[in-house]
Length: 478
Image (cartoon, rainbow, N blue to C red; front, side):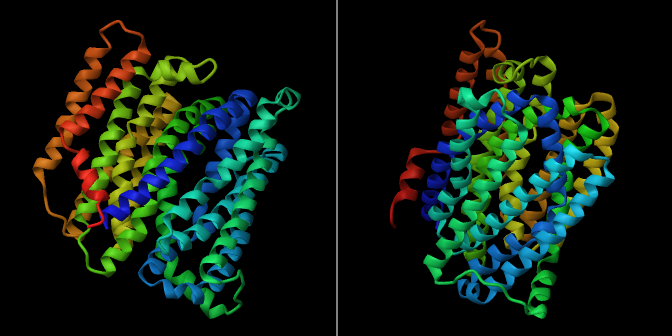
């Protein structure tokens, strides 16, 4: 099982590394530099409003469906029409309610026009995620990996032409960015439906059995509450910065969180593979401890390398990537990235709790996160603006990560390993010391970052988080 996990995960990481960094740095970042902080900050605030209300769009169907089909793939034929119908009904309800929320928040003509486009993007994106959940639940991870980058690859081609072609670059508008995403997500949804048909023979169809649709909504309701609570403590910060500070501050916060989103790409890929795999292992009563340890060893040290780098050279990184960036931007970036190790812990441990059916417990943990996040944001943002939101994110996600570890160890009966935990703590302390010494050398900052990164990789091998022998063993058929 570990060999299957690693081979599929490495394939997914490879295809995402080829596409998504290009999207983020060559397209998304260039769009912000082209249209300016104010327009892009408005777009990001509207996007986060849509994400906060994602409970109405997804209603937990994706995780519920993945968990169910991974344990019994024969259920797909019976469930698919009702699931697809439920998804379309939720899209209609979601669109109406989010648009009303936009009106209540004080958005006007141009902003409401953007909101309509962003709503369409989110609706199509959610449909694609649901369709992909069927493919990954059937353990077709490589096919799902290709689909996960199809939309971005199409966007790179179209937006790249618009941004870098002299005839169109000067007049580029945020609206062009939105319409391109709508077109590309639509094509990806069609491709996903075609793949499901080829793999299973199931054609897209709708079910108008009210009882069947109601039963699905009822069973997925706990998952929906979880999505709502997680959206609030993970995504409300952008909205609050734009409303409590300014659109310009929202743009600054967007520049910092963009790099966090790139980093989180790896954690999301892990979670995407782990959820159906955990579901199958639990159904077959296999031990999940080896996969947990492997995931943490691959994710968390890598996260701390990026976190320490952000604190040491955040200002230089932001100045390299964005116009008019300075010390303040670097500080925001550093605190945003400080939450990354906690996110990596969440992607592993909360995914196990989801597969294990501990949704009520996850909801309680997430509710605590909402209370902490909103309380700190309302206190810190008026005083420190985007920096206050970044500090809040770090504190909130760190507290939740500790909760995930404690409760997951209890519910899944994971053995305590003080030596393993101590190794991770020692790794962080030593790497921070190396970064501090390197900064005093007077070398160019890029060389300092490179030395720190190499030291981190050596440390991962020295502490046996990653070893050549273990990789070789995982690749063996027996």
